Image (cartoon, rainbow, N blue to C red):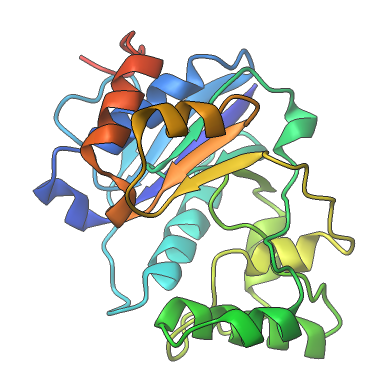
Length: 242
């Protein structure tokens, strides 16, 4: 069995934790899921999972706070050696095997092309810093997807993070672990992941996810149509809800 770790921002307590409820429901489709660990915030409606409080000490650096929570999880004796790192805005749309949880690359996946298309927000800057550091230090120079669940181990994750000042300055993106753990980037199957970042029609959303494995959204993408979709797609309570 593979345990699942959710590093949750403590800012979540000011919301209704809608995303987490449905992310947990999506795990009910998987027969390999063991224990659930919430590191950070825990909603009042959650049950039968393990909650480990953890603050968010890194100001204006979401990725560093996430890495800090995952490192805390690695120190927990009850956590399975291999575990899945997930986010509350990430969902598994169908039953998958462990081999399907291998990481995928972004499009564009090479730094030079990414820099040509990138804007000027802080996340894009951290992606550039991350890949440049990895390439300079002999690790993979691919840009991995950071919006799908991925596997890690209690041994490899702390060892990898010990090699870099991940909390320095604006920090590095969380997928730096993937660059250090995977020397060859896997191919990106067409339609594997659907990501919503803004307005979309109901029927178009269902068309896009028809052959997808993973679904996720950013804050701007959590629109009424997406909420309705999640309620329709995952109508049954999970065993982690009161």
